[in-house]
Length: 243
Image (cartoon, rainbow, N blue to C red; front, side):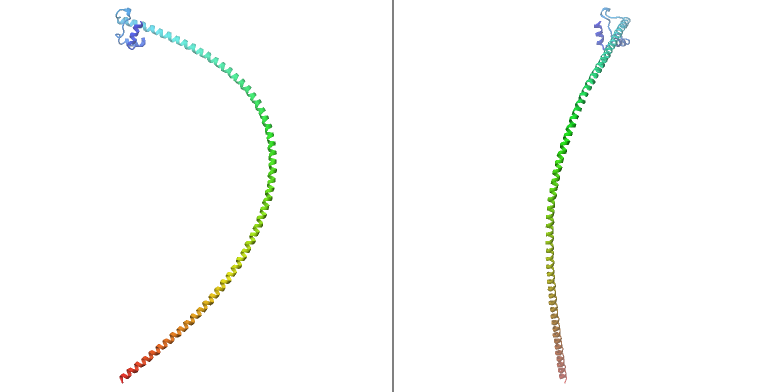
């Protein structure tokens, strides 16, 4: 039979159902089993095929039932394992909670001890810092008083220097004013002398102008006189020529 079905699968049929569907339209594709003679009639082929399909269907149903049973057993086993895992997880959780509680208590006790130690250290540190701050404050106060005295001495010295500088500047200004007054008197005297000289020069220029005018007038009179004499001579000569 295995050779027969291997031959059937050689035609491309994997199940008896596929073979039955193909046989309904074409019965020439199938050969009879080896113990059935060379060939079967169409009716025998159909009967054999029906038996084979029924046998395969039963095998499939048995396989499906076995598979369902195996699946149910697997599910039941998985449920048991899941329940066992839940129980184990619950036990682990309880153990973890217990360990966590113990660790929390240990941590709490440790933290309380550390806090007490920290508080004691902080009290000691505050006392140390207060003493340090007190000494620093005293030192700063001493330095402040010394600095104030030093600054006061420097300020007094600076005030003395400022006063001396003011006196020197006042003396310089006084001398400058005196020199400026002297320079002003000199300028005024020089200007007065220059004005007197200019007035003298103007007077001399006026005298020179008057003298020049008088000279020009005399020259003009002389030219007029000479012209009159020349005219008289000419007139006399004309009269002489007429006579």
